[in-house]
Amino acid sequence: MHRTAPTTETSSATRDAPLRGLAFAALATVVWSGSFVTSRALHDGVPPVQQAFWRWLVALVAVAPFGARQAWRQRQLIRRHLGFVLLASLLGVSVYNTLVNQAGLTVPAASMGMIMAASPVLMAVFERLGGVRLGPRRVAGLVTACGGVLLLMGGGAGFSPGDLWMIAAACCFGSYSAVLRRRPAELGGAALLFTTFLLGDVMLLPAFGADLAVHGGFQPTAGTVLPLLYVGIASSAVAFFAWNRAIALVGPSRAGAVYHLQPVCVALLSRVVLGETLGPARLLCMSLILGGVVLGAAV
Image 1: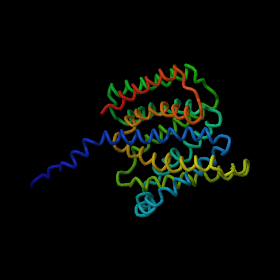
Image 2: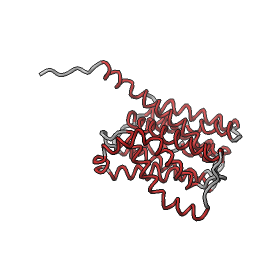
Image 3: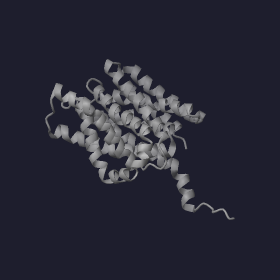
Image 4: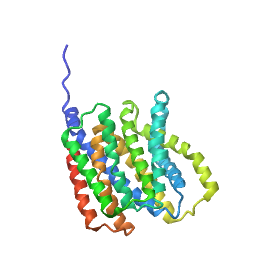
């Protein structure tokens, strides 16, 4: 009986998996950075719950051409793993971005990005509890990057009650990323996105209805509709697909190391779009964050 040798293409794909995983993580991180800026920009125009509801409705429409048919074909598999799908929908769709939008009412976009950079630490903790050895270099990278975040906050970013919403969001996103490790291997990526977006938006319906009753709707203008299209298509459909692929290829802790780039991206975008200042202290601390990413994302 002869054992089939692995093909060159298979071996090459295996070797390239870490690099592709880090590239997917970087893409998601950069695209998500814009969502913090849009959330902050929308804080006067669209209530937080309504932002979340319309974001995921747009995302659902965007992924439907690719995911609806696959989800229907895999409906028995989805039903069998309904607990996983519901938890991923709750953490990654219903709760996470609603908390971010709530924080955007009072917290500057740059500070939102800084606090979110702590979520990879929780990802690494969950992965370590799951029996994965992180390695000294990756741990050093996480500590360095997290130290840069803490120093940045202590050096002038300040702390407000709204930051608690972002801390809760960071914990929620870290938990979502850890849950993704339990994704059934046979469940397609498009099917997962479509199903979580659908169930997550359904879970938001009661809060959306209550918010409409209290605050009324928002005025559909270019300043409200275009940001919602961005977060629905780019920050949801595109970024979540990229992040889920990154988790599958390199795991939460290594993808989380790249996620530390987010406060850098958010700070630069908020400076250009919203006019928020950076200052030398922030630039210095960002170098620590970037250094931590280089260490923690080592392949």
